[in-house]
Length: 306
Length: 202
Image 1 (cartoon, each protein chain N blue to C red):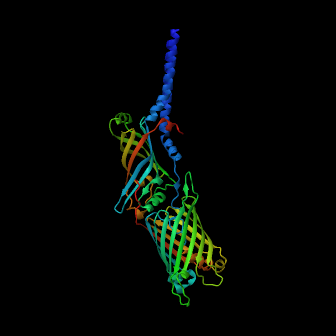
Image 2 (cartoon, helix red, strand yellow):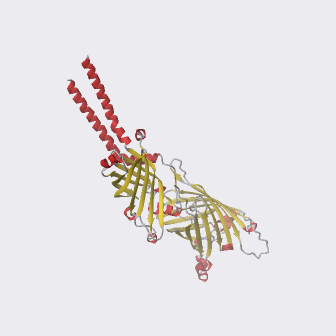
Image 3 (spheres, helix red, strand yellow):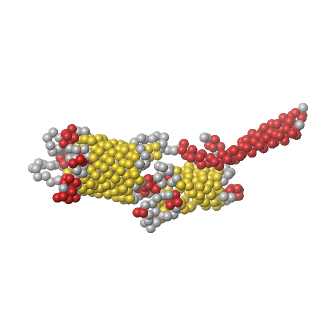
């Protein structure tokens, strides 16, 4: 009696031991990666959403994007047209406008830039600060917000007898750029804008122009995207006497270059010009063909984290 | 009466044995496990045009010395480059890290039992055979490295090469000369022993 109990007991013990050992081993083999991923997921920090747009420009206007720290961007933009200027002007080629600019990213969030436009011989300088960046994770941020401000000085010689002092030649632009990358392909942006001009040329014209811009990009492939941009002018005088700037374009990325080809009704490439001074109507053929060429140089390499 | 006592002793011994039997495999399994979430992985691509280097300090890995099983999980987004534009292109155009956020490896130490016996005395050169998944593509891989037990931690080194083409990483003609056909990868981990309490967490 005693003997059988012990043998039976031993068998149970052995069986249980084997069963437990086997299940835990099987569990370990099948679930090692799963457990690892679950653990890392649990501890996942919030992750910034990068590359909402390819360039610092959507088409005419800015995007929320600032280049990475230590990056110098050389930007050449042309606007050729309008097409309705006829064969005498070679359909706009004779009147090609150019803007040459340099932008430098002081930090990952802050960049400064200067540019020179041939249209009205305007020199502009801007500051751009990425205030909020879209992120995922525990404390997710739904949008990116970049603050933009610029000053533009017209260096044109006037012969109207007035004294065009430096303040009278200056106009300022303030923008809050709000964007969200909905997917790796689709990003949309809103651009509330205020432009202040110290001098206006016409009776009854406002010094301030309020406008709301909207735009976005859709990536058709990894290196090719379709862009659109529209600025709706809210200030009455400007809305009555000028047209809203509209633009359609593509981004083509090739390593260190981004080529942006576009069609727009605006000859100007800075905010005060394309938002405040566009007078061409798209449906009358007042369209300019244009391009921006972005070339990125890494001036200062990032310090390696160890 | 003494007979009964004896039986009681045996019974309690059996119970104790059962309890130990339940507990011991678990404990052994837990103690043989080493894990890190801050492993270093770097890669290097050398070409005529330029050298490209990136490092990642967020690699997660687990080694089960009881079974010889190995698992890695590497967040692609955490690779840091010296040039920020390269980092953007790496994530956006090459690795598509939004679509494929992780590279994983699951494998088995070859000759595990024999190696692990000697691991307590000296550094062991090991071979791991398994599956490497990256950019949505899985390939069999055999990786050679070393294991060492040092102050209760498992120190791991490994060095191997990966061909981007094997993992359908598409490199456009224009930059083909800039990126090596074979990229070298270096792994350097210090794994802590996993306590049973940590394992028990879901």
